[in-house]
Image (cartoon, rainbow, N blue to C red; front, top):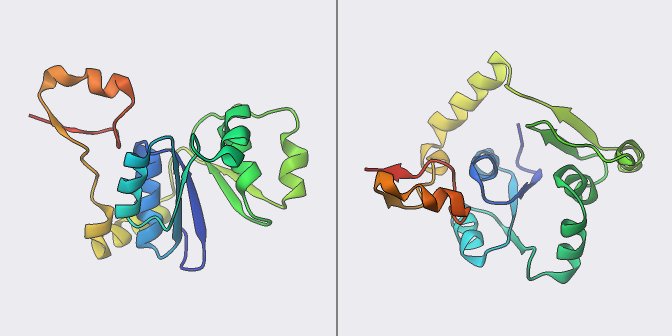
Length: 161
């Protein structure tokens, strides 16, 4: 779990990234968010992100981001000795291990946390409920699933009525 002197970078503003940002900030870490949309970055700022990167507008960031996959983006941006958590089956480029070693980075895979981590998460939620509530982008009638398909939403679970 992040602590107050940690910085955490989230890639994008989907459900996992937004909730990761919320938890990291609630734990005292500094949040850094990326998005292709200033509107979504404004939401990340409202959630407490201190640094915002629009990778479509920032040419230095954008060149690197568009060339590589998510794991490569993470390795390129992790600090020396930093950690990268892989929550899904990532495709690893051939040069990955040299790049991990060059940064003395730790790459840890996870599908689900331990019981101890779950208990820590519950404590964090109970102590910071205002910071860890799910973000509801918009309320839609059930017929509005097209918004989800457009990938213009923030969070994965909009309110339906």
